[in-house]
Length: 46
Image 1 (cartoon, rainbow, N blue to C red):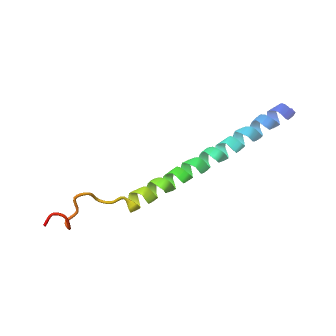
Image 2: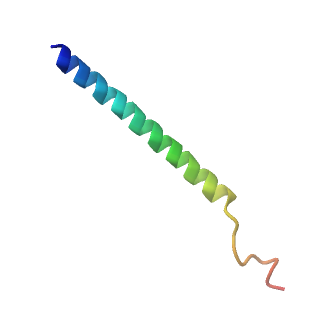
Image 3: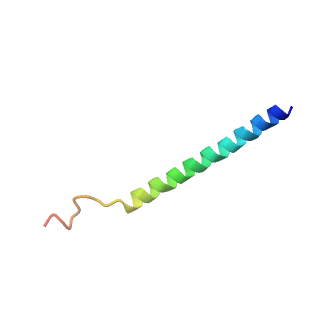
């Protein structure tokens, strides 16, 4: 019984870590998109 409980606890912890990594990656992608410079803007085409 203890082994099943430990396996379930490890699975829940693994799921939590996986979701946190996904959230961090999504936030990093958002920041990268928001701060990315746009090449060939209208200021350089004079």
